[in-house]
Length: 607
Image: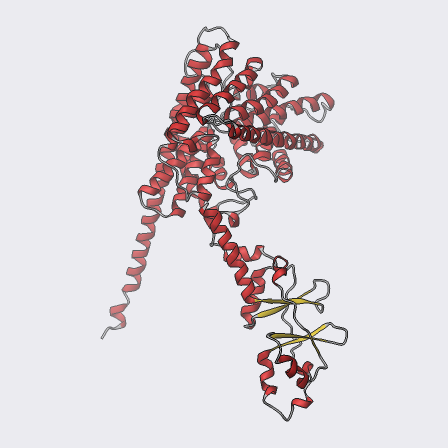
């Protein structure tokens, strides 16, 4: 026989085992996220070397074109003495497109375009799975595209590199689809955080960019934060600490300046809509061309080269021009041409099937247009707009928000890239306006509206899904029933009851307004009492404590009413007058409708 003394040690032993198991899991996951950060950071280092080397060979040595670098990324190799040659610059993007197109469409066709959108698609639709060859192909093809004059960003290749390693590691360890998605997203955050020296924004971006609504994938934030910090440290240990840009000490002190900032937001909304339409217009035209995919990036590169022949500043990265805009070294016409031209060169370079990101060009486009608007307002009202360079920074944040639906992480990433946190207030205003006005388009077409709409979460949100569905969505399933007059005798009801399959009977008064309700179970007591049957009218059987619903009520509340009262059907009444009956809604129809929505979500996920 066991005594209390014998059994008591099991509780602390059990707690100790659970504690040890929990600590082991924490350390295991931490090491995995650190590993993802290491690989993403090393990938960013390698890619930065590749782009520096490629730019030195193709743009500097061959074409004599030397765009100014940002302060945080000076040239690693000495500048050549090659004179500037526009004709070489005309051909280089086409050559780069031909070479990168052959690499991508031969070895990994999914590496075309901007890598961040491909990572978003993998998260939602492909169980977080990315082929192991994709990151390598993406790095090489993107380096060729960008260093031969193609307009694009570095974040796409690095994001896909980190995501690819996270996916590979999760697959090799036999982890679940959910865990693979988290590790893949952590890789995205690590790539963004390292290449732009913005670790906090990288973590937030990886969680926010998945959805169009202002929603974060909460389970991604901490893993992406760990990986992003590690990747950032590795990158900075090689290339130096500090931000990508050096912005002056901008401040916001005059509330009247919110007017010009609002105008800037509206300009950025229009520009963002044009950018998305132009980009996916090129994508559509590219898909319509009846030629092998390998050659399409070369055609896009040729179009890019033609623009670059006249405006070389629209080629490649263009970050150095943003620094010059901060320092008020550029004119309004130059900035406008830079912004518009960059839209076209990016669309041709990436939309035709080339490889690169869209975040980097968006920073240049938004910063250039912001600088132009700032200079114009400085000329009109110099006493209000005293620092037109501040509009460059705010324009960068506002424009990318208008095309990506990521207001929170964009505000942070621009602040980290510039080392300036003094313009958070106007940035918040501009990003809020551009976000609200730009909900109908996005440069990331694989974004979904919210977690409920993601195939990755299909079936996980029973209550959440029910709360988004209203009774009005099921009005075609609301049955019209016969109402029973309250003065109908029970004898007359028996005659009607024998001819109907109705189970619930609303009772109405002399004006046809709902007064009570009863079910077939409520009539049994009278059915076998012949002596009281002649004395009973139907208002005596029905209950006036009516549990009803309205068209605006959500199905979660409706199901709670079904369960609480253990009933199978509810009267649907008007919003304005709860005594006017619309019809009856059954529990079976509600559950059937929910199952149909789940099946639709599953079908989307499978396709």
